[in-house]
Amino acid sequence: MGREMNGGPKPSSSSSPSDMSYTVEQLIAVNPYNPDILPDLENFVNEQVSTQTYNLDANLCLLRLYQFEPERMSTQIVARILVKALMAMPAPDFSLCLFLIPERVQMEEQFKTLIVLSHYLETARFRQFWDEAARSRHLLEVVPGFEQAIQAYAIHVLSLTYRTLPRSILAEAINTEGLSLDKFLEHHVTNSGWVVEKNQGKQLIILPSNEFNNPELKKSASDGVPLEHIARIFPILG
Image (cartoon, rainbow, N blue to C red; front, side, top):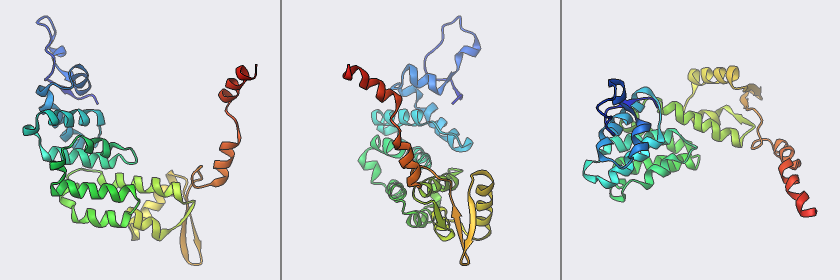
């Protein structure tokens, strides 16, 4: 990220005014354990929320600083970090962040809820996830783009499992139905290569083939022997 901060290392007296501000990346690279940068990192979390951007390294740095400065921990900031980490699935960011959060903090209700939501996503229990999310709107709606990010993750999971799926399964996974689902399908037919067909009065969605939802592709991908493997064999044979 290119956000500039005023904390961190101080320039020499001969430095120009433009040298006196530092990006988050520079602050955490120079001295990631400097408690003076903690307010900058907290502000950066809020900026990630408002601009719908994401920086895992900066967020992990902040969580590590909280370990050394527990009295300065903002549970609101920590919650926002975890929500952003959920939005990054299937990346393991949520687990990486949770590892740095003390168990006593994890036992607070809002964090227990986020842990449950993470479990539902990891196990593809989307109906339970959306039901729990609906009961926790106060926690999730403060982070713009949350619903869209989880829908993208749900589609990722479905694409690994299904080549053809009923409309009802898609509707449950992304928590959308009716006209909103029609528009969602139109978008993906146009932009993602989806095909929508009707079979015995039911709507079916055909997803693009990949090596996970199409055994033939997986078989063909494993048929060839990579050249580098052959190159390793020749010295042994000689």
